[in-house]
Length: 159
Image (spheres, rainbow, N blue to C red):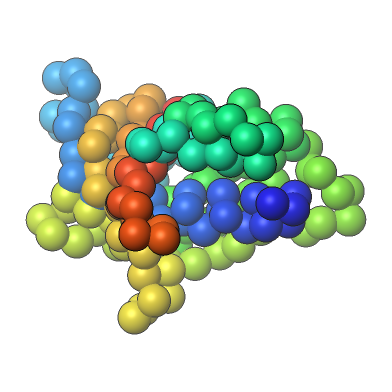
Protein backbone atom coordinates (compact mmCIF):
# COMPACT_ATOMS: atom_id res chain seq x y z
CA UNK A 1 0.00 0.00 0.00
CA UNK A 2 1.52 3.35 -0.95
CA UNK A 3 2.18 6.10 1.60
CA UNK A 4 -0.58 8.22 0.04
CA UNK A 5 -3.07 5.33 0.15
CA UNK A 6 -2.20 4.56 3.79
CA UNK A 7 -2.59 8.21 4.75
CA UNK A 8 -5.87 8.50 2.82
CA UNK A 9 -7.15 5.31 4.46
CA UNK A 10 -6.16 6.61 7.89
CA UNK A 11 -7.93 9.91 7.26
CA UNK A 12 -11.05 8.26 5.88
CA UNK A 13 -11.20 5.79 8.75
CA UNK A 14 -10.40 8.46 11.30
CA UNK A 15 -13.05 10.70 9.83
CA UNK A 16 -15.44 7.78 10.11
CA UNK A 17 -15.00 7.96 13.86
CA UNK A 18 -17.71 7.75 16.55
CA UNK A 19 -20.86 6.19 17.90
CA UNK A 20 -22.12 5.22 21.49
CA UNK A 21 -20.58 6.49 24.68
CA UNK A 22 -19.30 5.42 28.04
CA UNK A 23 -18.12 7.95 30.60
CA UNK A 24 -15.02 6.92 32.49
CA UNK A 25 -15.41 9.15 35.52
CA UNK A 26 -17.97 11.19 37.39
CA UNK A 27 -16.46 14.57 36.47
CA UNK A 28 -17.83 14.09 32.93
CA UNK A 29 -21.43 14.04 34.15
CA UNK A 30 -21.72 17.82 33.96
CA UNK A 31 -20.49 18.01 30.35
CA UNK A 32 -22.53 17.03 27.32
CA UNK A 33 -21.08 14.68 24.72
CA UNK A 34 -20.78 17.62 22.35
CA UNK A 35 -18.79 19.57 24.94
CA UNK A 36 -16.50 16.60 25.59
CA UNK A 37 -15.94 15.98 21.88
CA UNK A 38 -15.39 19.62 20.90
CA UNK A 39 -12.96 20.54 23.68
CA UNK A 40 -9.49 20.55 22.14
CA UNK A 41 -7.90 18.44 19.41
CA UNK A 42 -7.68 14.65 19.40
CA UNK A 43 -4.54 12.67 18.51
CA UNK A 44 -4.83 9.00 17.57
CA UNK A 45 -3.17 6.66 20.09
CA UNK A 46 -4.37 3.26 18.84
CA UNK A 47 -5.72 1.65 15.66
CA UNK A 48 -6.75 -1.92 16.47
CA UNK A 49 -8.16 -4.41 13.93
CA UNK A 50 -10.04 -7.61 14.62
CA UNK A 51 -9.35 -9.95 12.98
CA UNK A 52 -5.73 -8.97 12.42
CA UNK A 53 -4.73 -7.51 9.04
CA UNK A 54 -1.51 -7.41 7.02
CA UNK A 55 -1.45 -3.60 7.09
CA UNK A 56 2.09 -3.14 5.79
CA UNK A 57 2.09 -5.99 3.25
CA UNK A 58 4.95 -7.90 4.90
CA UNK A 59 3.09 -11.21 5.08
CA UNK A 60 2.43 -10.90 8.84
CA UNK A 61 -0.89 -9.86 10.29
CA UNK A 62 -1.17 -7.29 13.04
CA UNK A 63 -4.00 -6.21 15.30
CA UNK A 64 -2.45 -2.93 16.48
CA UNK A 65 -1.20 -0.88 13.52
CA UNK A 66 -0.58 2.65 14.91
CA UNK A 67 3.17 1.97 15.21
CA UNK A 68 3.33 1.08 11.52
CA UNK A 69 2.53 4.70 10.67
CA UNK A 70 5.42 7.11 10.24
CA UNK A 71 5.85 9.67 13.05
CA UNK A 72 4.67 12.44 10.70
CA UNK A 73 1.31 10.65 10.40
CA UNK A 74 1.02 9.64 14.07
CA UNK A 75 0.95 13.28 15.18
CA UNK A 76 -2.05 14.23 12.99
CA UNK A 77 -4.94 15.85 14.85
CA UNK A 78 -8.73 15.87 14.57
CA UNK A 79 -10.66 18.84 15.91
CA UNK A 80 -14.43 18.57 16.24
CA UNK A 81 -16.11 21.95 16.34
CA UNK A 82 -19.44 22.82 17.90
CA UNK A 83 -20.65 24.19 14.54
CA UNK A 84 -20.72 20.64 13.12
CA UNK A 85 -17.39 20.66 11.28
CA UNK A 86 -14.37 18.46 11.90
CA UNK A 87 -10.85 19.38 10.78
CA UNK A 88 -8.06 16.87 10.11
CA UNK A 89 -4.70 18.58 10.60
CA UNK A 90 -1.10 17.54 9.86
CA UNK A 91 -0.08 18.18 13.46
CA UNK A 92 3.43 19.28 14.37
CA UNK A 93 5.28 17.45 11.59
CA UNK A 94 4.43 16.90 7.95
CA UNK A 95 5.62 14.00 5.83
CA UNK A 96 5.94 16.42 2.93
CA UNK A 97 6.67 20.04 3.91
CA UNK A 98 4.73 21.26 0.87
CA UNK A 99 1.49 19.59 2.05
CA UNK A 100 -1.18 21.96 3.39
CA UNK A 101 -1.54 22.07 7.19
CA UNK A 102 -5.25 21.19 6.98
CA UNK A 103 -5.75 17.74 5.45
CA UNK A 104 -9.54 17.90 5.25
CA UNK A 105 -12.53 19.74 6.67
CA UNK A 106 -15.89 18.00 6.66
CA UNK A 107 -19.07 17.65 8.73
CA UNK A 108 -19.91 15.64 11.84
CA UNK A 109 -23.01 14.98 13.90
CA UNK A 110 -24.29 12.56 16.51
CA UNK A 111 -27.01 10.06 15.59
CA UNK A 112 -28.96 7.27 17.28
CA UNK A 113 -29.36 9.10 20.58
CA UNK A 114 -25.67 10.14 20.57
CA UNK A 115 -24.42 6.55 20.35
CA UNK A 116 -22.94 7.08 16.87
CA UNK A 117 -21.01 9.80 15.15
CA UNK A 118 -21.56 10.45 11.46
CA UNK A 119 -18.68 12.08 9.62
CA UNK A 120 -18.72 13.37 6.06
CA UNK A 121 -20.89 15.33 3.70
CA UNK A 122 -24.67 14.86 4.01
CA UNK A 123 -25.73 11.62 2.35
CA UNK A 124 -22.12 10.35 2.27
CA UNK A 125 -21.46 10.04 6.00
CA UNK A 126 -19.45 7.24 7.55
CA UNK A 127 -20.72 6.00 10.92
CA UNK A 128 -18.71 5.02 13.98
CA UNK A 129 -20.01 3.61 17.24
CA UNK A 130 -18.95 5.62 20.27
CA UNK A 131 -17.42 3.29 22.85
CA UNK A 132 -15.94 5.85 25.23
CA UNK A 133 -15.90 9.63 25.49
CA UNK A 134 -14.34 11.47 28.42
CA UNK A 135 -12.25 14.57 28.98
CA UNK A 136 -9.16 12.61 27.91
CA UNK A 137 -10.27 9.61 25.80
CA UNK A 138 -12.28 9.20 22.62
CA UNK A 139 -12.78 5.59 21.49
CA UNK A 140 -14.90 4.51 18.54
CA UNK A 141 -15.57 1.33 16.59
CA UNK A 142 -16.08 0.97 12.86
CA UNK A 143 -17.28 -2.25 11.25
CA UNK A 144 -16.54 -2.99 7.60
CA UNK A 145 -16.71 -5.93 5.23
CA UNK A 146 -13.82 -6.59 2.84
CA UNK A 147 -13.79 -9.62 0.52
CA UNK A 148 -16.52 -11.27 2.61
CA UNK A 149 -14.68 -10.81 5.92
CA UNK A 150 -16.15 -8.57 8.62
CA UNK A 151 -13.51 -6.40 10.29
CA UNK A 152 -13.83 -4.28 13.38
CA UNK A 153 -11.54 -1.29 13.66
CA UNK A 154 -11.29 0.33 17.08
CA UNK A 155 -9.79 3.82 17.06
CA UNK A 156 -8.60 5.46 20.26
CA UNK A 157 -7.72 9.15 20.57
CA UNK A 158 -6.36 11.26 23.41
CA UNK A 159 -5.79 14.90 24.21
